[in-house]
Length: 262
Image 1 (cartoon, rainbow, N blue to C red):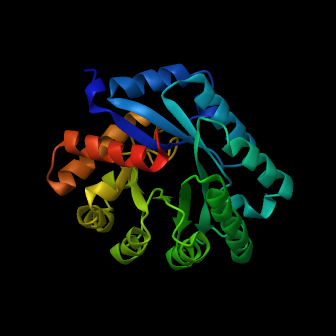
Image 2: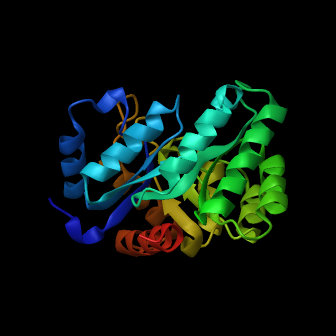
């Protein structure tokens, strides 16, 4: 059944990748059928092409927007030329945020000090462009919050995407004025601790996302993720909080629009 009136937004997806080659229109059509009104296509995963492709995709579809940045995994490969190019892309009218960027101490694909330097540069870029920032953080909550506090100087707002931390970490980010975005992980059988965080975080400070093609929610685990499945994330938020799906859709969509000015 078509649920266009839900008006959900998938606040973080990577549908510009090869996993969706030749299928973009069909993917977006399925999203509309599931009640998903808009999709934020996030650059920065892999190399610079993920950014240019995200912007091109946003340019091609009226309900799609883009962000530009570089993932902390790739901090070791970010050049001055890359940063200059990202500044050029950031002024595109369909680019609504800097990111994804941040810190990832779980995999250590780039040295921590280098991740911090690149993250700092992107925080500065967010200030210079007056754009919000999309933050990837894993096992680095204390350092990430401190950099956002010290470098952002209260002037940078944004979202911690795919939040998986505890409530203490959540509260630190909330105190900085950041939103927290939750993904299909909250549908997983072993995610009770994260669902308890969802229960405590005010709905007015939450986004929902897919992180497509990753983190596919139950009951589709093992398959490629796509924006239509953000409805399953929203349904889980509604169940955990004891409210309606419509309430979750309305409030999280208002949150995304308020932060990203769309």
